Image (tube, rainbow, N blue to C red; front, side, top):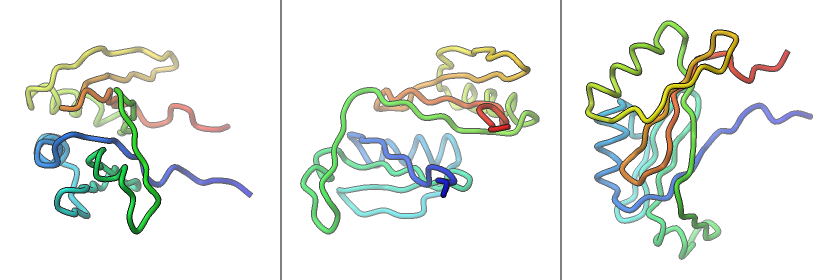
Length: 131
């Protein structure tokens, strides 16, 4: 048996509209679900980015309560050919690139922050691939 991938990743946020503007309008991730005063979900390739209002999800309800705080990290994978375009897109959206890193083997990534100060990364496709 093998786990194929992480299907969803969750970030806890302070403002749904601010996150919509950032992830949908600036990064172009499609909105695929939303519940007023609770959460907004975005499609990220074959995965889903869940953004929950921290205090609302802490209360639970239909699903078990969950909560987090602090500056979390996630990475978006893009093709090598589109890497430079993504870096330009982020910069043109007025989002500062915190750092670019050369991982060796021809792999680059760059880091930036969302409005809740989560550390986001765009990485070239193929990193961490299993042999």
